Length: 132
Image (tube, rainbow, N blue to C red):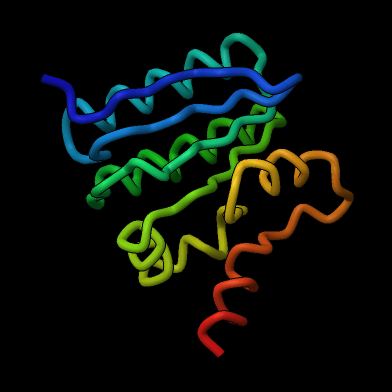
């Protein structure tokens, strides 16, 4: 049984990976690593990860996200995240990874960020306004 299901879809030149399950040591991390590696090999440069249905991420899973980000960035591409669940958002905040990744509230904002001149995360700003 796999820990992570990955569904790939395209929106023009943007590849969206819908993730469902857990990104953790073992199969979940390996599957994500392989999916991102294959996209880079195919020359895909704009990648979005939909984390709406990711229920759990451990340190190995975080490491895989960072590794994927680095691999794609070195290939001249961009990796962005959207639809973070509360637990995943909290983990990304505690580990300061929100300062590394562009994170968006929803898919349309994330897609638009690839065409905007300033690709800064509006997600954290919107959360700060809601909390403030």
